[in-house]
Length: 236
Image 1: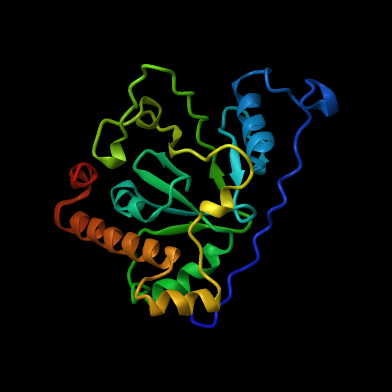
Image 2: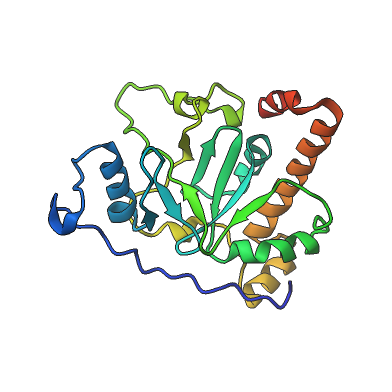
């Protein structure tokens, strides 16, 4: 791991779809919820999407602007403290998806080995190059006087859409096309040395180590008590 240099991350946004309805055969931003959702991801965030089959949700392409770590929600909630503000996190059912720097999925197996977690089945998955992630619904604008809706992964009642199986943003991406700056990543060799001298692990290392620990906790609980205990872990 010490000699691994992270892959270069492209900061070039995905080509945008035309704003004009009907131009080039593409729906405009006001042509329905699905078209507006795709417009938000591709034009506002610069993220690549793939056409959804009839009746299926829109999907985001991973490995270009970001990779994804997919973990049990109860385990992922414990790792949120390692993320900087603006680092997106999604929730779908009992799974949490944390966006990390592009190239992180390739680093994950070696990183787990280095942290001595590689021999265990942790239910910790990664989506990288050529992967697909179900696109979470666009968050509703917060209006004056609204109370924030609590989230199940942090021990409170979850959003109605998540309870129904839809993907939602627990921490939505900020406006613009610069999400990469907030994503956990492996440092360069010089930065890694400086971090080591300070006695602190790099962002991605701390994140993965915490998630691996919590995934192992969930795994042991399932072995001891069965899947029914997952709800108790989610509220712990």
